[in-house]
Image 1: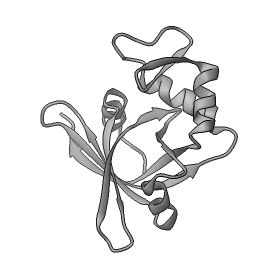
Image 2: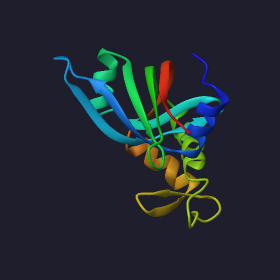
Image 3: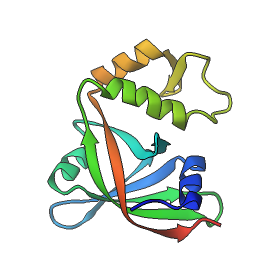
Image 4: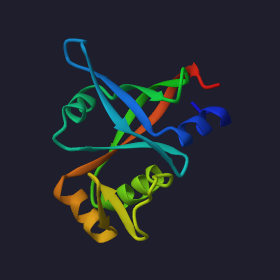
Amino acid sequence: MMLSDAQREFIEKNHSAAMIVSRANGAAHAVRVGIAMVDGKLWSSGTQERLRTRLLRRDPRCTLLVFGTGPWFLTLETAVTILEGPDVPELSVRLFQVMQADLQPPPPAGHIAWFGVPLTLDAFRQAMIDERRIIYEFEAQRVYGLIG
């Protein structure tokens, strides 16, 4: 499903979301995540060991609730593809540069903030390798909400 221009704009301005996946018994598992549109694709970051990763490998369905300000929100029912492998550190650079584009104060040029510490791009890439990072890519199946 293609996002409307208004939905895409909402996501481009709001990078905080709840990510909800299903446990084997049907109970919800919800966590707060950062999201961003990168080259027209909706991404978030995770690790190989996260519970949500294991649950998505069993059932790739996921609901994202993107938080706006005030009463505004956008819900996306999605199918998730897990991107992994040697490209993930560079994909993570792109993802976090988009998510951090409006940070105030911004990280120094050529750096990405990681847990409050500015890392050089090479140090950030190495952190992505050390943490066994992956990228979640979301394909919207149904989208609804109040976006103003």
